[in-house]
Every structure is written in C-alpha cells, then in structure tokens.
Image (cartoon, rainbow, N blue to C red):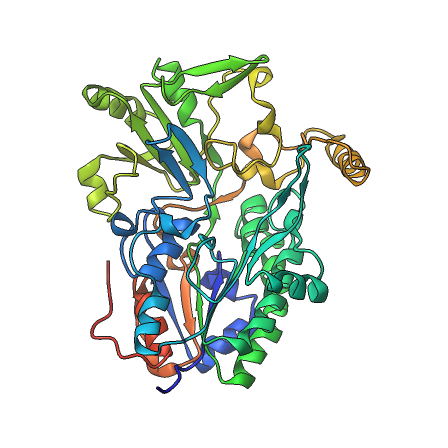
Length: 464
C-alpha cells in the first residue's frame, strides 16, 4: 500500500498574530502557504485543546476538561496526569493507520504521552529518588531512544521546561529531538513551550515577550528548513493566546470565607479537604471547575461566586453544554474569569499556614495551577541564593527544598483560558500546503487537517 505524505504537527503554544510580527521564519512559512485563525475551545488550556485537536471531538466527548480536575472516584485533585487513556475516543493516528497500515508516528512532548499508541514517545519525566530528590530526565518509547537522545543532546533540561528558570533551553532540546525523529516517521507531533514563559511573567505586549518570540523563531528555523528539504507538510498550531492580566481572584478563599470550603491541619500547615468541603474550586488559569457536594446548595454556591469581583460567567450544566464542556469530570459549576482576571488556587487565609509545597515548584501536589512558579519571589532578595544553595545540596546527594516561589500573585502579567476577544491575541494555524487553505479552523478541525495533509481523504471536516 502507498505511504502517506509526511506531516509535522508543530504546537507552538501561545502563538498569535501579535507574536508572529516578531517571527520572520514562521511568517515566511505562512506567506508561502497560509495562515488562519484557530477557534479554540473552552477552557483554552493545553490538555483540553490538544485533546480536541487529536480526537476531532469536543471536550464533552474526550473528557480532558482542563489541565486537571477532581477525580471523584479517588477524592483527590490531580493536575498534569500523563496517561493517554484519560483521553476518551479515537486519535488521529488511528485514522491514519486505517488508511495506511504501518504508518509510523512520533510524539515529542505533546501531553498525555504515557501509554500513547505511537511508535516513538519523548515526554518530560523526572527521576524521583527515594530520598525525595528530583532529577531532570525524560521518558521515551522505545526505551533505547532515551540514551540515543541524551547522548546527542544531553539530559532533558527539566528545570528549563517549567519553573523560575524556565527558558529557551528546553524548547531547543525538544526541537533538536524532533529533528532527529522527523525523517523516521510519517506523522511527527512536537510541542514547543517557550512562549508560555515570559508572556505569563511580563505580559504579551512586553519587550520580554517580543524577545521570546524572536528567540523561538530562530530556534525553530532549522526544523522548518529540515521539513522543507525532506518534503514534509508542516502544520503549525497554537492552543491559545496569552492576554494581559492584573486581577488575581482567590476563588477558594471566597468559598472558605462563605463557610463552604474545609481544610485539615498537619504540622501547622493547612491542606484542602475536598471530601469535607461543600464546595471548592480547581483553578486553571482563567477557568475554574467548582465541585459542589450537595446539589441542594448549588444555587447558594452560584450566588456567592456570581457576586465575586473578577468572575465573568458561572456556567451550570446547561451553560457548559453550550460550550461543549458538559462532561462528568467537569465541575458542577464552571467559572470563567473577566478579561483581565485569573484564578488562583490559594485556599489558606494566613500565609504562615500555607503548606510547604506552596513555595515550591510542585505541579502534582497543588490542587490548582500556579503561574507564580515562574518566579523567584521578587520580594525575597535571598530567593535566588537559596535556590543556588539547594542545587549545591542536591549535587552533594543531600535532601533540599526550593522554597522560592512567591505567595503573592500580583507578579503574574499574562494568562489564558477564556475564549479570545481580539483576533490579534488569539491562536493561529499555519500550513505549508496552500491546497489545504481554510478561512477559519476550529480546534477539532486539526484532526482532519492532519489527515488531509497526509493524503487521506476525509468525508467532512469535524467541527465543534
């Protein structure tokens, strides 16, 4: 059977028309092919948008209702789980392989990589040592790919992938890994995170944001040149645009002061108690899932939240259905922030009672997303020095704790999650193949665009 046309599906997270103004290499690709607005989904966050693109289905069908949610069967909040079985439904490579059995697929850092039924996987995966230390590393499939990449590129730069030291180094590593795998696969997925960092730290219109766009464009140029030389069809997508914010909303503190959220205390530190709470929120950028224990109190909780400054919408199940978000994993209520607002996960009322993980980079322990992890506490002049001391302790094999993250959310200047109001700050699609041109592309349409770029006939483009 004939082979599919080779495709590179490149997720340049945070890419918008505003950012493209400082990205000449990507702009050249758009000029020779085409560029369109991407109609994203609610919530406009990584796990939800990527899952919609890869399944061609709305959030209500695939179930990735955010970057995390409350697992009712476990009684725990988990963000950034990794197993692909959490995403319900057929994936785009399943359809590709029906048309072209044996088609080879690679995933470099798209989410839900663990257990993904593809030929090659590269995804961040730290080493969690028995003494509590964490070392940078990645998971690969096949296992031998790990040493092949590390021998060529060095260890995966985990501490440049997220946290106060997040930088272009992680994106460069991912891009180079993609260049290695691209010639060997028919469909290659690659996720490049660099625009996420300074646009959240400083805002999308800051000098730092423009510099990040130029820096990333230069790093992407060799990969785009490889694709052009190899005859690979390139689809560049973005999940969301990052917009300026200056209003953090402490939604869980609102619920606690209303007598709806409960905590338990250990060693003088307070921990969210979801089992005992009448209502609590899983904050995820500009969207929050609110779980209400007693349906009879739903109207009470809704009234409290609707009156909270910074809350734009309070969606019940009917309201969620209008956005294709009404899945069993979704909150009983879903909050959408006002344009310049975003939701913190904070639930303690006294910083002296905050859990120790609050001041660290702890994406799996915090019951909500924390963009303050991108900062060394600006109000603490010793934060960087203490981080350096922690690294020394680590190199000596000693236990250490990086307590450098601020508990003050005012430093955050950019966020996402709402549907975009201004197209210049919305996500985009760029394609090298002019014959695939569309005026607008829904996130779910990316599934069919990939197949068409591979030469697979699609009866109709899926839309939300």
